[in-house]
Length: 264
Image 1 (cartoon, rainbow, N blue to C red):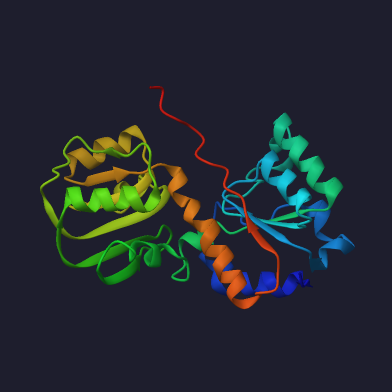
Image 2: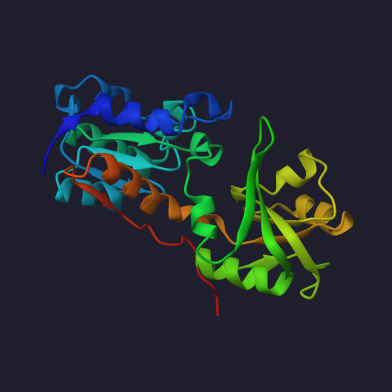
């Protein structure tokens, strides 16, 4: 497999998902300062793409001789001293430094970019008339259909697309109601309906808090949550984008699987 200069790949990703799209609170980008200036980081020997960095992900990167991990969620969100109080995270951190493996996270700058693969994924099941990104600080997608669809059909298609094992709907959810569009923000984005004062819509996200469920029911928002794992489409999307431009580079994916299961 061919090696490429690290800065060439990072510049490519930053062009697709620029830093200015990143939320103020986010910690996307390079995650390990100790590894950043190592000589081994000048070139990429291989890439592993994942949703979150776990010990299994790092072990796999070592196994396949990959010196760069691209994750959707940042590995370091808080001050490093706070993060490393987590013994498991410190174990992973020390192993990454020892093996000279860097992490590069593409998080809210991915979520907020028109270059991400969400709309293309939705087009596999929906006849989409138009799609728009709405919002400034917090962005979400507006997806308009060619024809009205019942809430039940929309829901079934979304569950299939994202492989959701634990979909939830608001108490006010009318399966027979028809919609010409829906709004979607992956991850934990139940707050958007409150922050944007949204009403009388079909809204889709990964997770929502209790107060957000209350708001949805009180403001005629038909809300569907599909679990945070719905964001896992990121790994195939990033792999395809990288291979399209750097087709001789070793680019692998690691599925960490959903992090919970039903009790019965």
